[in-house]
Image: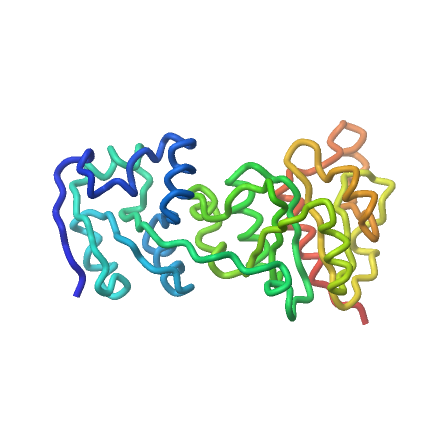
Length: 271
């Protein structure tokens, strides 16, 4: 039986997990310190619970108690008015409920890649929305796992979780401890590494021989992959661009669009 506590003041200390959401620095500090993340909306909360993340508490309004009843179990539920809810969230798009969830220890790269055949590796993507969107693409198109370089944005940051629509819970991921030798380690594990680049002299992705185990490397939003990873990858690959677009100066896609197309191509199995 869930425990209901009615709260009338956004400053109530019981709501500490949910306050300061508009302050990115505070949010990151709180998440790291308390080992928590926030799931937003019924669908995302359900996916987080189904993935095995423990619920610390739920913050919601009266009208969302019934739709969430079957997933809340014996969770502690703070019930607030619409006005208090919007004041805490900072805007009116909280989708009716927020859940404070406990983080789990991240697995090692070797554990995540065991049995994986198609993997996406992200190098230094710092935008949480982009990371969440790429997780959604990867999960939707059947990628087995995601590996993050040390400086990549946190997939469990609130914005990442929201943009991914909970896909961050459905695809295994790990963070590299050692970026410098990261590709060498992937190679030791049997992966062929493909570095996605806008350089139109690279091999077109649809012409590349995939092999049994392939890791697709995606670089940061502005600069793309580092020169080291481009140099060390087994092959540089590109998404072919329209000649008309190239003539007009449009020579690349944003990282999310590129990831979606590349993940689709990555799933090809050579005869």
